[in-house]
Figure 1 (cartoon, rainbow, N blue to C red):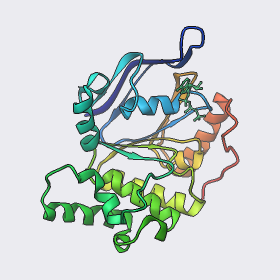
Figure 2 (figure 1 turned 180 degrees about the horizontal axis):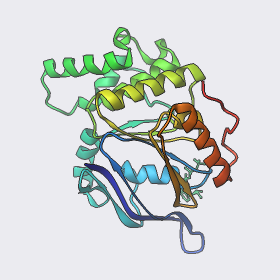
Figure 3 (figure 1 turned 60 degrees about the vertical axis):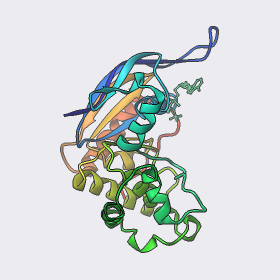
Length: 258
Ligand SMILES: Nc1ncnc2c1ncn2[C@@H]1O[C@H](COP(=O)(O)OP(=O)(O)OP(=O)(O)O)[C@@H](O)[C@H]1O
């Protein structure tokens, strides 16, 4: 089943004399259970694209369909509901609420749902088991490590069992050990829960955990690569493609797999 269909999407920012074509007639699809990365030089349009799919922003032309629904035309009330149930977000800076415990942070997206306590506890147990954070539930965000915070953010994104998990630079603020852990957990979620994952990254190591990478340049699809061999081979392919696509000084082409 196709989970995401981006159809001839363009996004123009600015006004008459100062227009930026951030996305230029871009189309692609993502199937259920895929783990897809978006890469490309700085300013290529990656975050803009993610924001269109995340329903945070709307395209100037074209449409985005998620699970056969045109989300780019959905009214705000329906969209809020759709976001809550079908989309999970992991932000680079986690966005955890410091005054709430880990348990309360994770359960936040369910606050408006009339779910039974038994069902909530069951889901919480599943999520915390996959993420290895069962022992942290009564602590506050400032009482756990950065890597653990990122996993809690991941738990909050997963608690509703979303159709699609979206992440913008999820490893951006993590050290290499925490980044590796998070990527292993994301792989687990992808395998165990069959959650479709889409992430934006500059980092070839992070991208090497995906099964397919879409390379964006100047708001258009430049190329895509699909992982067929092991992760090291895929990492090398990603580095080669980064060299081919060029531009954007934020690449870390000397990063090696950890
Ligand atoms: N709100 C905005 N108003 C005007 N231009 C914008 C706005 N947001 C993004 N842009 C421009 O659109 C283009 C694409 O930006 P976007 O943030 O999507 O790129 P990116 O690939 O995510 O870049 P980076 O890797 O540096 O984060 C850039 O030229 C950017 O300057």
